[in-house]
Amino acid sequence: MKKVSKEELAKIVERHGKWLRGEEGGERADLRGADISWADLSGVDLRGADLAGADLSWADLTGVTLTGADLSGVDLRGADIYGTYLDEANLTGADLRGAVFDGANLTGARLDGTKR
Image (cartoon, rainbow, N blue to C red):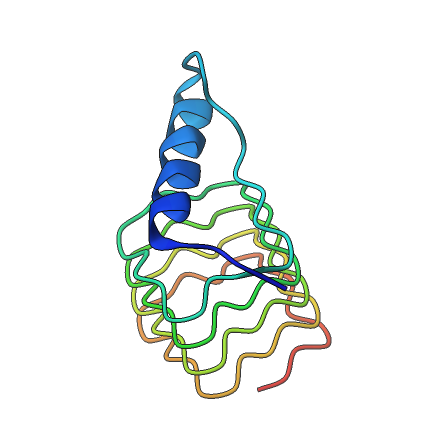
């Protein structure tokens, strides 16, 4: 699992924002299998991002938009998911133990096989 630096993560988020807006230089965030544990992603828009198998344990995901994102097999142990948009997200097989979901939107999210 590759540890993603704070600087590298900021660049990925910036390119993803451009991709969402249809701007030149944009690219869908591909963080499959990445170690971004303890990261502060609060308020970031990661709609449609690919985070399958990523380590997001203890990350601050407060208010993050993950609508339609692939979070299958992701490690969210202890993550702060307060007010996060996870509608239509794929959380199949995710580890959600100890994650704080207060105010999170999970409408239509796939939660089969999750550890809670």
